[in-house]
Image (cartoon, rainbow, N blue to C red; front, side, top):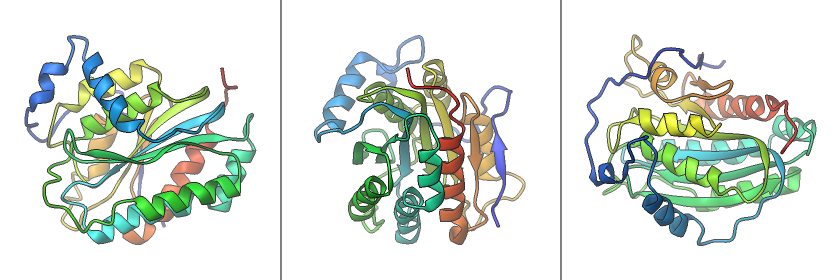
Length: 268
C-alpha cells in the first residue's frame, strides 16, 4: 500500500539542481549556521502567538510546503492528512506508551526565503482531546492552495532553518527533537541545503521527510532519493514516499507513529 522508505545515506549530500542565491547569503556565518540577526527576525515572526508546551517525549516540527507548486488538491492532502494523522488511534496509543505520555508539535508552512507562516505554535498533545484541538487548528488555518501567486520556489534550506529555530525555542524539554518536512520538490530557491542540514544535525535534531511524488516524476530519479541523499539526517532519519495522493494520510500516520515510537530516552 505504501511507497518506499529510504533511510539516511552515509555519503555526502549532493544537488541535482542549481540553487539560486538570495540576500540571505550575507547572513550565513562561516560555520554554516544562521546568524543571530536571522534568529531575532524569525523569533519575532513566530512567537507572536502564545506557545503552549511542557516536558515531552518528542518535539516535532511539521514543516509543510506551500510553494507555488502546491495546488488545492495537494494543499488539502497535506492539511487534512496531518490533522487526521494526529488524531488516529495509532498515534494516540504510541504517545501513551512513552515515558511522559506527551509530545510537542508545531506546524508551519514555507516556500521561498521570507515566505513562511506558523499555523500551530508549540502545543502539547497528551491524549485524544489535545490531538483533536491541534488538528482543528491545522484544518481550519492551514493552506488551501488557492492563492499561489508570489509564493515563489521551494527553499528546503529555509524550511530546515526555520524548523531548527522553532526547536531551539521549544518551551520545555524533549528527549528527541524532529523536523518533519513534507514537500513535492527539491531545493530550488534560497541557500544550498547542506549548511542548514549540517547545522540542524549538529544540534542533535533529526530531519525526516515525506516526499510527495509528482505526476511527471522520473522513476529513475524519484524525489525520495534526493531527500535521502541531501536532506534527511540525524539519529534514525528516514524519508517516506506514498505511492500517490490516496496513500498520503496513511503514509504520514505510519511515519508519525515511527517518530513517536522510536524515542527510547527519558526527557532531560
